[in-house]
Image (tube, rainbow, N blue to C red; front, side):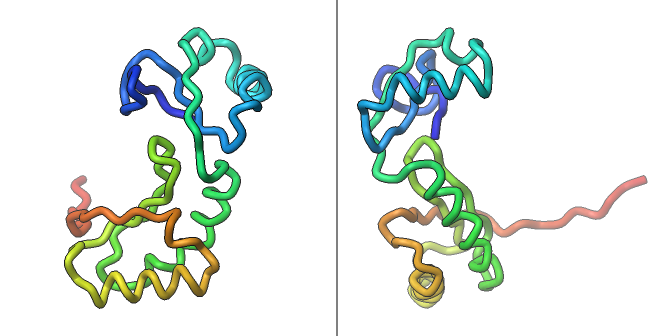
Length: 131
């Protein structure tokens, strides 16, 4: 994944940060970015970070893990490019039964628990449409 970061790799800043599982692929990654997005992104300085997972793995796991949204009080799922991880938003982080249910489902889906972070998120409230 890629995102804009500061000198320390934190989100926001003037660097284009890219996670690579093999740091020797930097030139190939930059060529691919140029091919897909043009030269605009490469006008920023590139900062390469050591990734544990490549984006294709995260994307495939994210597609499979959509099933966890059927578990009550699971609020959202996401690929967090800035952390090289998947994120699952839970209504309450301290609910051990909820966390156990989600982790069991992830194991059943063959998604490594090490690739997932949990965040507390408020419930989604639907607002009526106004005319």
